[in-house]
Image (cartoon, rainbow, N blue to C red; front, side, top):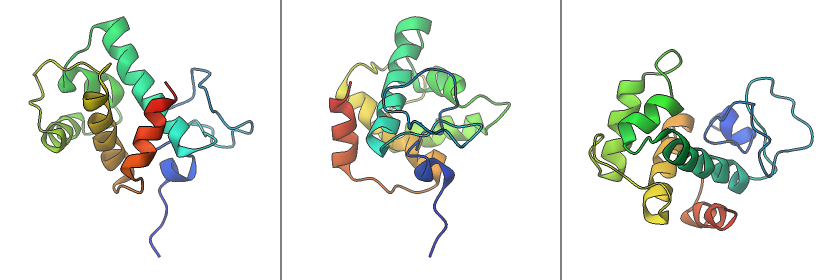
Length: 134
């Protein structure tokens, strides 16, 4: 049996670090680096909220600028991350996107989970249910 990724074990498939007091956080946080959520839906909701905050607060509106902040080069192969996310969702890295839109945010979150975990353990329904938590 394949090993379950840390992000899946934490119900945090976006590997979001501690900082904000997210909705749906587990009461007990045993991972010193990454948030732990009560369900994957809340972990995915946090991805949506981050993507929307990056757009509203910082004016980041392309896959390239969003991923540069989400997965900075000091921790990631950001160029590869951007390229893969762009290819997976079929939008050029420098094209403007609107993360407030469900048909943009969900595919971007799916791509982020694919990249962060290295596989996709969640159905479309999980991403849809997470969207309903916004």
